[in-house]
Length: 212
Image (cartoon, rainbow, N blue to C red):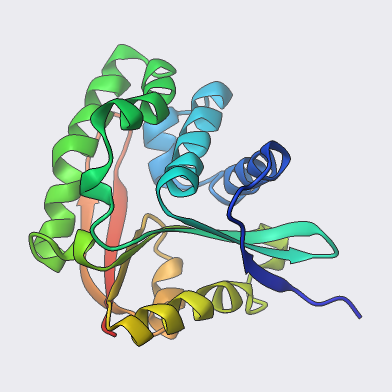
């Protein structure tokens, strides 16, 4: 009988990163944030998924859930106090390809979101330094056909224990309302929610906190 294994991957292969990108695109296919950011442009969607994953791989921890060597879920984490120390030129190398894949109108919108509206709302929910003072769960993805089987919890528990042992809090956000119940079941407290508007429709953001 096969079992799901959760593990940190220190140096993910290109093949693993591509598998994670495919999983993310499948899981977020109908996500309102993905639709606003990229529309139906597959190249923009792929660029956004790659950016999201590489941010975690380069500057945080990358955890996978596998079964029979097949990727069924993953999480990426940013350690406390590390994000503000990321050099601007290094961040630009990761974010740049996504921004270049967008139309000028969408590029302007996303630039404002990344630099102002998103961090501003998170700060309202967590405090001015709350996002950076603890562990930030950047991405939590489970393959659509494997959702509801405890895989997210299996991925989450090692990091929850690590944070608790160190006396560090955990925070995260989601753009999918269906995930609110999942995060609450994992022990998170909902700190705030907001509906963002855009020329291409509205999308929601929910911000969570878990004390040590």
